Image (cartoon, rainbow, N blue to C red; front, side, top):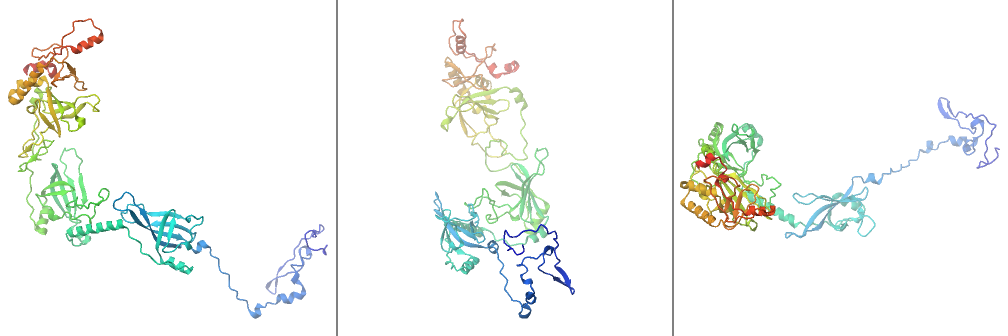
Length: 616
């Protein structure tokens, strides 16, 4: 079996072999570690001839000879280490400066804009991105315009490679044409090392709109710098050490309220604090304005300045308030609010006298004397002083005239077409002297009937006062007569009718009314009594269900219920004949009740106890 060739199919295992011992190969000889190799294998069987080809005796001298001991070892150069592509070009990119033209529609100032961008090519993975540098107040969405990725060429399935990029060429990226004008130093050196000559650098075109904005900004800054007073540059730390804790305090008034204006010498800021009076109902320690620099003219800003969402800075403000501008008796404007300086503390007076050489005037007490003319205000107390006491109410008048009211029918003098035909009822309270106006309902008018003006004193329009001590004139029954036009808060009304109680009140108090008003009301009610035979229709109102109006004379007359009348009650018959047939159906009875003559009584209108009614 040993003579068989060692090819597949000719090797067999000997089942009689039970010795599998392997001869030891590692040994020591003369104190050295040696390897004993032989042709004897496992179980002392011969090994393969190929592995022991050089184990013969005639090769022993050849195997033991080492030529490197005689000639030395060959100095072979080591193989160069292989560096991956993504490691070699990590964080290395090519940068090209470019621009593209963006069209602007529906603008008379510009037709296109030039937008400058940077095209960055990453060498590690052959990707590209387009980034637009941010420009201040551009109003456009800037930053990364094209995200990083492989950019396909236009009308081609391939992607852009760095060999396709150069200076002075057009690159189409997703439909936008970019023109490259420059590149950085690394890009230029890399392209030259690869045998590509970069093109000549070009000057990027300017943006006309940006140039116009810069020109306007330069002009505004130049004008503001010329108008500004030269301010010496001071070290804020020196001011802090010198003026720390020093505050100029002034007492001032605005809108009849007391305030304290504090000027901080450390940083030239002003704070305004409201001085709360006892039992005023306001929160204590209320700051109207925190520490800030106050410009003298806070509305003096350029036309183009976006003041809606940007705060003004030192470049826009021409001049701030300084200690020279604060004097007792003068008025300062803090963001449009008018403050009158009344007094200052002792430290402020010493500072002005010793440091600035200015003697502050003595304290000013707010008085009502004034030579100026005051226009009437909707609020009667708007022109009164702080020290003036409120007017006491006439309690006797309120008790005696508690339920009495004078009612007038009015129409609005139409300024707009939709105000045509609007009717109102004016109620004058004899107990308080206030006027209340209710609007009557009208079908398909689109307006809700009800209270048009709450009860209040109504001043006369365009009335002027010679002195602020005088009271503002208000409307009284002397000003209310048929045909009178009254102006109530810029709304003009024409009085067209009156109540029967109005005539009753005028007749009993003729000494309080002019003769013209008495004759006007008498002639009006005479016409009403002559034409009282006409049909009367009800005025439907949620708050005034007890009023009726004639069509011809527009007379407002109070209707009464069918109750007993007092001897002094006035009666007006409509003149409509009463029906003779009493046996009618419900519908005919309802129509008959509507056509019955209605008796008008002053007692039902006044609604007061009989004791007061007989005294009046």
